Length: 346
Image 1: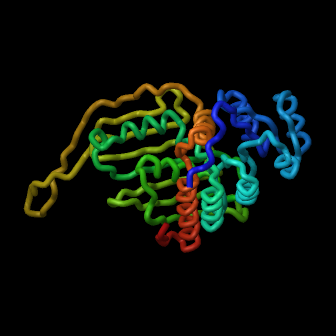
Image 2 (image 1 turned 120 degrees about the horizontal axis):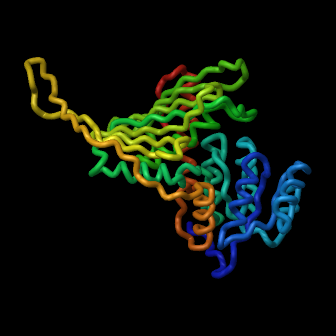
Image 3 (image 1 turned 90 degrees about the vertical axis):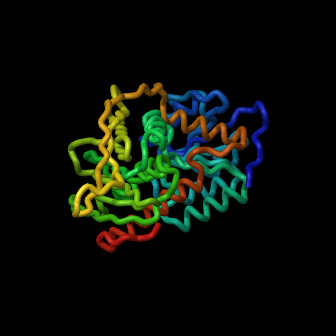
C-alpha cells in the first residue's frame, strides 16, 4: 500500500542509529540534504556519542531506543548498526510508525525479510535497504552501456570483491561482501537469479567462511559468478559483464577509468562450415572506450532517494522487495555451501 504523504514543505526529520565505522559518513551526508534534517544520533557507546556531539553540535544524542521514540522530531530512521541487529531495529521502528533506511542486509533470513516487508506495507511506511552501489555513477553507466542494441545478448557476469579484512564478528564473508554484487547483478539484468551454487572455506580457522565462490543462474542461461574474500592481499572491486557485442568492466578502484567498454564480441552464426557441424563464429573487433562519468557520492544519492520517496511517495530504487530478493539469494548460496556446491533454488 502507498505510504502516508509527508506534509508538503516540511523537512524530513531523521535519526541516525549507530555511529560506528559507517555512521559518521551517514551523519555528514544527512546534514547536507536539502529536504531533510538530522535531529538525533543514537548509540549505546558513550565515546561514539561524544564524537557525534563534537562533530555535529546542533544534533541531539541518546543511548537507547525508548528515548529516541519518545521524541516528536523523528520521522524516519537510518540504521547503521551490525548486521545481526538489523531485523529487530527495523521491526521496532516500523511498529513505531517511522520510515526506515537500513544498511544491508535488512535481516539475516528470508522469513525475517518477508515479515519486515509485510509490516512496512501494512504500516504504509518506506522501507529501503542500503545498497550504495546501485547509486554509484560507474554502475549506472555500466547499465547504460548494457542496452540490448549495443550490448547484444548477455552471456555472463563476474565480480571480484577481495581484501585483507575487515573480518566481521557476526556474519561470514558471503553475507558481508556478496550482497553488493548480487544487488549489482540483479540491477544490471533487471531480474533475480533462479538458482545458486557455491563453495566456501575457512582459511583463517575461525567459525565463519572467509572465502567463497558463488555462481548464480539467471533466465536465458545467463550466469553470474562472484568471488569474495577477507584473506586476499590484493584489494579488488570489479564487476564484468560480457555480451555478444561488447564487454563492460566496472573497476571501483580506478578513479581515472572507472568503466571501460570493449567494443568486441563473438556470437554463433547459423552457417555450418564443415562436416563436423561446427558453427561459424562471428567476431566483432572495435575500440576500447572509457566513457565519462559525472562525479557524485553514492551514499548521498542513496539518501536523496530515501528522502524523496518519503516526500513524494514514489518508489525508491532499493526498496524492501529488492532487498528481499538479495537475501533470498544469500540464503540459497549458504544452503549450497552446506551441500558442497549443489545447486539450490532461490
